[in-house]
Amino acid sequence: MTTLTAFASLQDSRLSDVQTWSAFGTSWSSAEQKILECCAIQVETDDVKTFVFRCPDFAALAFEPGQFITLSLTLDGLSLSRCYTLSSTPTRPFNFAITVKRVPGGPVSNWLHDHLQVGSRLLAAGPAGIFTPVGHPQRKLLYLSAGSGVTPLMAMTRAAFDLGGDPDLAFVHSARTPQDIIFRAELAQLQAARRHLKVFAICEASGAETDWQGPLGRLDLALLERLVPDFREREVFTCGPQGYMDAVQRTLREGGFDLSHYHQESFAIGSPTAPVDAAPATVGETLFTVTLARSGKVFKMAGDQTVLSAAKRAGAIVPSSCGQGLCGTCKTALLEGQVEMQHAGGIRQREIDRGLRLLCCSKPTSDLVLDL
Ligand SMILES: Cc1cc2nc3c(=O)[nH]c(=O)nc-3n(C[C@H](O)[C@H](O)[C@H](O)COP(=O)(O)OP(=O)(O)OC[C@H]3O[C@@H](n4cnc5c(N)ncnc54)[C@H](O)[C@@H]3O)c2cc1C
Ligand code: FES
Image (cartoon, rainbow, N blue to C red; front, side, top):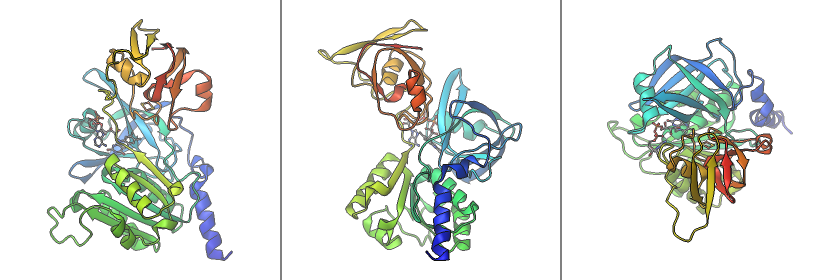
């Protein structure tokens, strides 16, 4: 092994080793809520702002690059929880930044943009999520993002370079127009300083920047081959709207990419306050009876619906955020009965052993009694 290769391997193992990240601060579990105080606000684009937080006692807290926190707010008397990726790097563990895009009509993203100020305090549940470099050692990386999906990949990029190395990283970001490219200046600066970082932006239209020289349109196989000819040799991390990620997967498959080296995270959710899969049961369908032990509410639901959507439909107040078994917000004790749960890392085995379940990704296979 040459010295250069040995150095690169050391880098890989540091990025992908869970202990690298736990060393930067005190552990903060996803089950624990902490108060965070906003200490800076930065405008990124017309509809994106970064909010930087710190602990009021200036504690350093550990997380993995790419993980998200879950904010809990009460707006107009309604308790709302939303996940936001930490766009800052765990190598700077006194600050926790989230970069938020306004969603038209969305209560939390617009409230943050319009009302959060330096000095404001919020409650946040600790870092969660498995969309991180941990466990995926690979010398060459390809990050593909669209819109606000850039945030976990930016955290990973900042973290990788803060560790002091020069990983071979191709970062391809898609935006509506050049003015919508988030972190444009910082990525350009990083690229100028690092030999092995290649940053590309693809815009759907040139917008007000009529002299835009970069590619126009959408990412497809021909463009990917041109920008990153060795993409088949890279570990791929993708984040963006669902349609974008579906197109990326199709492109990679078409290009003969081995999808065992593909990782993605979706921000796309059905509205957490208005469940989408809660169609009423049809005649003849097997129905299960669900009893909410604390409120005394009882309702019937079909086995092809999630317990969360049926409970909300029945008027129960259940905190939830990601809707995909990631964040742990909807964790509830199942007192009686059985469910089939397909989670995505939002619950630990020891919690399952204690009878807890994530209602957003659980479907009943018997009558249930829930601690709600
Ligand atoms: C793991 C995870 C990490 C996330 N990280 C970030 C982040 O770093 N930055 C960020 O801006 N957002 C992020 N989100 C999305 C965020 O949690 C909220 O969903 C978003 O800010 C909208 O919240 P809202 O209350 O304003 O609107 P909501 O009430 O949540 O949504 C209003 C409507 O918009 C739709 N919608 C929600 N989110 C999106 C979206 N991203 N794109 C298009 N339509 C949407 C909903 O389906 C709904 O119909 C993340 C989500 C998850 C699950
Ligand atoms: S709402 Fe996130 S795990 Fe259920």
